[in-house]
Length: 201
Image (tube, rainbow, N blue to C red; front, top):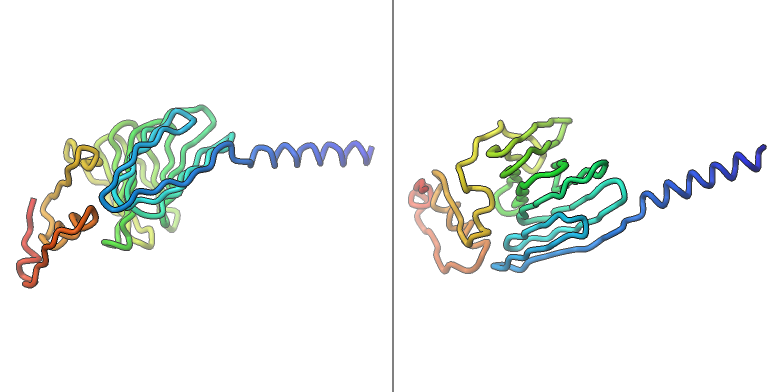
């Protein structure tokens, strides 16, 4: 009986080990000014914006993306029993099937952002904070993972970089120029703080 119990235990452990082995693991990165479209083996797809680095790992019971920095738009193929998680800084974004973007520019402006184009996602921050987002909604977080209130998004504002555009809504001129600098050298410098604070949209 002890031998049978040990064999059953070893078999259960072996099965657990097998479940935890990745079926796919790949890193992706874009250089400054570059964009990249990626098709994943599970039928999902990603579009990486400028200066973005992430790692995809697919397991038998879950799918995981770790976004180190930059921004990516995800089109997730729904799969029963296989949640799709995007982890970035202190945030975890969980989805079954939808289209959404995650942006981590903490090093650039101290912010993380999640924006949903279709479907719905759940965003978990620090201190067990959680919000549910549906199409046309977004949330931001600071480097510590504190979530903002849910905001409504302007139509077409999710990942406008796909079409080679950036959009600004009442932001300081200095911040707008810094955003352009993420894509390439502008050669522009604002020497007057009052001018840098001018709001543009």
